[in-house]
Length: 215
Image (cartoon, rainbow, N blue to C red; front, side):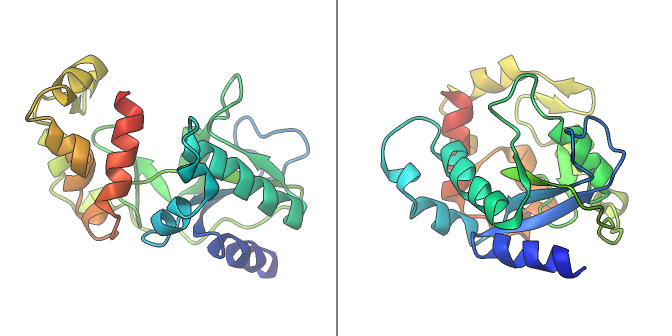
């Protein structure tokens, strides 16, 4: 655990947190990697840290991805790890599969990832691939098991349900006056999750993601 504690400390200094440890044998591990350490935004510290960075202010495309590249590549150099990202590679790294293998997130009633800490705000800025084998984090309870599952019916246009995601209906709704609630506060389905509500995420961060999703 000493090695994991070092990673946690380094990640925390960048407003990131260790959100899961993917053990050896998971699908599509890169060559030379025995363990993947998933890195997620450390809410609510993450948004102020990101907005103070040069990527947010320079007016260039994809500021959060560029911030993630700079910060996580720096962590990887310092820790002797391989940086991995959920963007920028073809084929993409299977972060959804890795996340499920970590035992810290699950497929929600609307099929988005749901985490014990982040709820339906669960996301990853990247990961560190280690040559060392680490033990997984302790198991935690799936929050949906004790939840009334309001997410299943929260979408105003029924775009997100247990049957799947109608992305065209979602985008069409976001172009309406009523859809500005989701555009400015974040997806209504993600927001209604009781765990999401306890996270303390800044609505400005959710609005940022919605703008980039809907552009």
